[in-house]
Image (cartoon, rainbow, N blue to C red):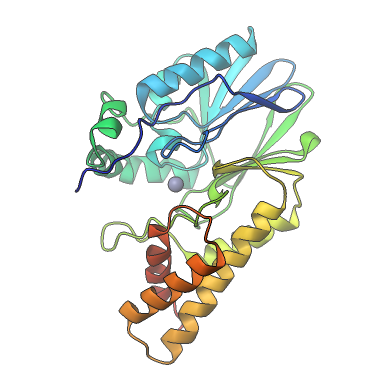
Amino acid sequence: MSEYLLPEPVVRTEEVRELARDLMVIPNRGVQLVPNIGVIGGTHSVLVVETGMGRRNAETVLAFAAEYAAGRRLYLTTTHFHPEHAFGAQVFAGEATFLLNRAQAEDLSTKGAAYLEMFRGLGEPVARQLEGVEIAAPDVVYDDAYDLDLGGRVVRMRATGRAHSKGDQVITIPDAGAMFTGDLVEAGQFAIFPWFPPHDTDVSGTRWIAVIRRLADASPRVVVPGHGDVGGPQLLADVRDYLELLRDETWVRRDSAVSERTIVEEVTALMIERHPEWAGREWIEKGVGCLCAEHPA
Ligand SMILES: [Zn+2]
């Protein structure tokens, strides 16, 4: 794999933001392979959402969370198994109870090692963060839904079913009208389709559309995307509109037996024209490939 010129994917806590009472986000500051990280408090417990990539980043997150918790019990969860979201969980062992939905726990155990190797190939800055990473196992696994009582605040953890990955999970804080979506939603960039046939074909454009419609129906006031700036319900609408357009433009060409190469070229040009300011243009082609495979023949 070629050496990408990625900046050092380092979590920094200087610009931490309070979204609501006892609800903090450590923002990704637009740095690739750094996720938005949540720290959500109740009277007796604090939930951390996402670890950052690798041990050092997770140590930064844990140090912040432990100080913030000030003696309250710590929990950890991650939105999905991808390295910058979940590959620091080992650092929380013995410090926090690690909760996951079953499908995500299975993603971690079946594909974690392969993703570790793949990401180590993304260049020295990424490989450095992944030194000494071991895939951690959750302490508690739930099937579809888990309500976590933090004391005076109940946080809803929900498995969405396969979309961006097989094991996506969203975390909602109803009293604050806030939702952590992981990579089901990005702000200011094209949806990430980890479509790598034959190695990984778990992402599903059609299921993703169904999931994002359901999330939009819940109309959260505050949406914390996997990457990019925190926003409101418009972020969900933007992703839904993009995915539906990507599907429609791909399928209409597929219907008229246009070659996949031409579909990629035409749809990519169209999407860039629609969203010239969005980053991550390389993911459009992956999305087209995924939706071609999902075309109802
Ligand atoms: Zn992801």
